[in-house]
Image (cartoon, rainbow, N blue to C red; front, side, top):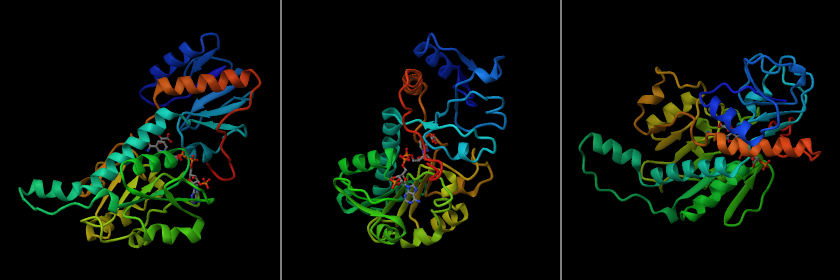
Length: 312
Ligand code: NDP
Ligand code: OXD
């Protein structure tokens, strides 16, 4: 049995598509009445307190988000494998977000928007893409794709990961010793790291100050498409206000939804989106998770199982 523990608005779409893909497999939803001990798989992302209650026969937790930080901090997370969502649909959406926002920063969108509001004709030329370096933090499923898309746009691309990687066209750095040289060469910093104890708060003033200056008109830019817990919002506020950063694109926040009272809303050089950089599409998700279940039921190993010790 598959239990859908989805606490979001498109719950019906997920249920309908999964039932279509798995017509012979029992699927129940949170709130239905069912034998909890018959549940072999639970589809969940940001688990509520009771998400795993009574699931004594569980084979795997299926995370319909790519990031598993909310699962890993659940106090009653069962010790079964966690399969996360890895899919070209999600990856492409993230690539779209990163490219769109990198292009906005390249073209000085924050500066020209501010001028437009003042009816000011300020005739300055933005930098050229081939002179701008985008540094991608995290060279996993999403970071590698984003790097390829940025290269295709003509940017120079640097990449940073935990372990050293060889990526065609990308200058790569790894670990703590690689972090400062990576930052020193970066005009636009893209965060695609998982949220772990090691990466929490990584987008802080000290990091913003180390970014490369002099290429983008208003100063270096930051794009955070990973998790709000990566950014120190007070540091972002001051860096965006005092020119340490020229602009930022934030899709994720320490508290979501971003409170109406957050001063981030009012910063003219901060582009805010409501955690939609790469949504998990029900059609793509149903295709992926139906395949995971069918293969596992046929005796094959589970794919994309996260490493609990690493936290991603
Ligand atoms: P992956 O697990 O595929 O990749 C993670 C990358 O981060 C790896 O390259 C890994 O290094 C690197 N990394 C992890 N820890 C460190 C560290 N301490 N120092 C340096 N590098 C580190 O993740 P995905 O690419 O699939 O996803 C990344 C994140 O994006 C998710 O965890 C999620 O939080 C976020 N996300 C946001 C979405 C949105 O809509 N805003 C949508 C989907 C995901 P190594 O290769 O050496 O292991
Ligand atoms: C994810 C997300 O982790 O949407 O997939 O943030």
